[in-house]
Image (cartoon, rainbow, N blue to C red; front, side, top):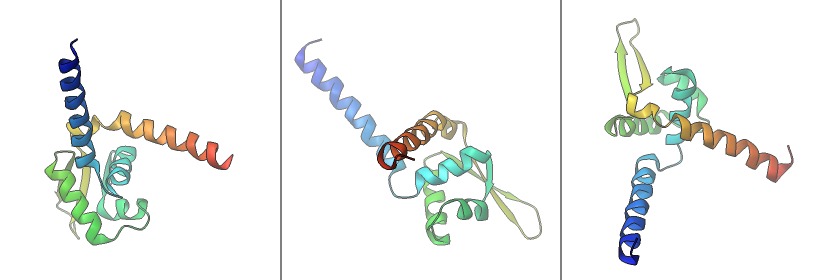
Amino acid sequence: MECRDFEKHHKNEMRAVQDSMDVLNGKWKISIISSICYYNKRRFSDILGDVDGISNKMLSKELKELELNKLVKRTVLDTQPVTVQYELTAHGKTLQTIINNLMDWGKRHRKEITGK
């Protein structure tokens, strides 16, 4: 591979990383996806309980962004009162390996830092 081709390939890979970070950026998105991943389907209030420190307004905003990026599907159930349920789309489920890897790394990192 010539130097120019290598640089172009590297730029494309760096752009792909940036695209991923743009979709998953912020304090909450990975935690929201993790909650839905773990349980398969989650109600709004369940996710709110899983993600420490997030407000109703912020959770609503983040879920809308995840829907726009085709990672999360929102379903309104015909119940009294109305129940809204979230699940990962097929595209969103492709993040499962990444979420599992982050979880494993986080456990190892905590042990490395704290010894626990």
